[in-house]
Amino acid sequence: MKIDVLTLFPGMFTGPMGESIIGKALEKDLLQLNLTDFRAFSDNKHHTVDDYPYGGGAGMLLKAQPIFAALKDIEEKNPETKKRVILLDPAGERFDQKMAEDFSKEEHLVFICGHYEGYDERIKTLVTDEVSLGDYVLTGGELGAMVMIDATVRLLPDVLGNQTSAPSDSFSTGLLEHPQYTRPPEFNGMEVPFVLRNGNHALIEEWQLKESLRKTKTRRPDLLEKIELTKQMKKLLHEIKREEDLEKNPEKVDPEM
Image (cartoon, rainbow, N blue to C red; front, side, top):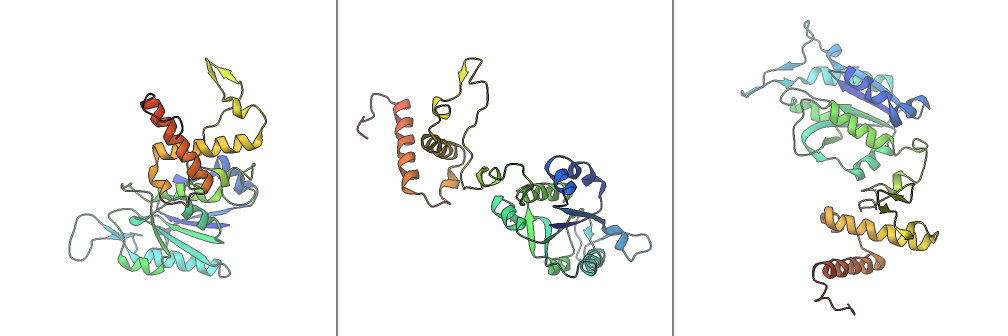
């Protein structure tokens, strides 16, 4: 995968993007990451990239010209690749795991990191996606781009050491991930659930699914409304509801429920 980032602060990427999973992807040549300071493409003798908005208003806007020129340069250097151009914008569609999965299937991603109070609207004519991390405002798009790149690159084939890790992550299945444990089996009086130690894989899978449902129901019930529940999921959710009712009012729960 190729990723280009248009930013006024390329130095922000050099540390985080060279470490951990992203660093390994770069070492294995599974990822090509190019950082472009689009100030270099300004046709202004002072290399300014911002200006006052027409009609007035607080703050400055990124000018269209440097972005257009930088994207043209990327296209001329990579004419053979189909590009998905992503504009980091607080008003954009909220980034999520599904979007990361979509991005990971692309050949070439281009991220545009903004600053100041916004963009000249004409920049958006070159963009395929306007994306936001959430309902808050950062000082620039760099941190958001790093998050999206990390979430995307880890899904590429051969990037993670364990190829089953990504598909079972929280949100990849539509559910939060079940609790997990490692050795020792007992620590500070807390034991690993016996079902995980008895070697019965069918029971382990059922426990994992049930606990994923339990965590999702408790912490993110909205996610349950977005997935199609199987017959087994409905059965396990019924068991969870009964267990919760029993814990709250043990004398009022019908044992035959």
